[in-house]
Image 1: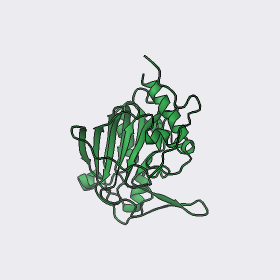
Image 2: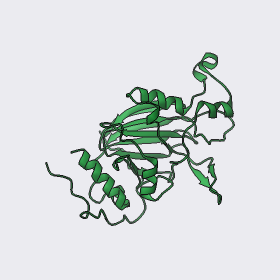
Image 3: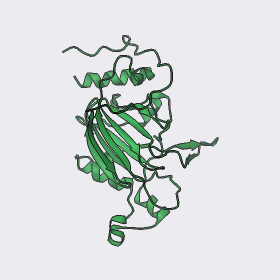
Image 4: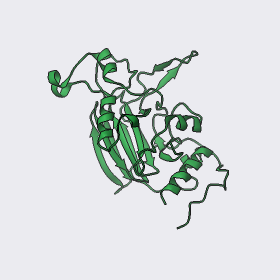
Length: 264
């Protein structure tokens, strides 16, 4: 079996893509593999196979998806927020960027996005956040109307795969945006996402996904009410030599090469 060829020799430099970033393409006939609506305030974990694409669609304005991902074959190799941001010289995520792992591999590539900004810095909410903002509503008093939080969901879903609190690393918040002032203070941008906004995440390894649809921890809305999200998984071709994400940054070419080498 031949090894994947590093793009442009060992320098990992490729021509930057020209023109506008691609939008998510329609899912072709026969390519849809799975589809479900995830209620607001839910937690979920599942596997996306290499070269399958996960599409997330906001079904209401103001949705948030707190998202973690792991190399399914070696879960210790997990999403690394710091390397993802410094390696791609960014503080936001959108089309062209990748989610890097601890081992410098590409876990997911963002191949299309209607929104243009997703938050990788804000973290996730906890029971303390929710109680401070919206009061206490537990299952004993409110049954299925109780208040949920991402921290509890993350820990529950991680436990299903033999993982635990030490695997709870900084997450991405899809559909949410933070701004910063001259003093470096972060602020939540209300009204950022609309119903119908969506993005595509192409798996570059077999990846374990753990996500929640709870509120962003900085969401200031006066009433508790996380929004539902449509989840779709569809088959997509492997990234070509001139793939937009591969060529977006030289660091991306290296990360994708590392994933291809691991997957031989």
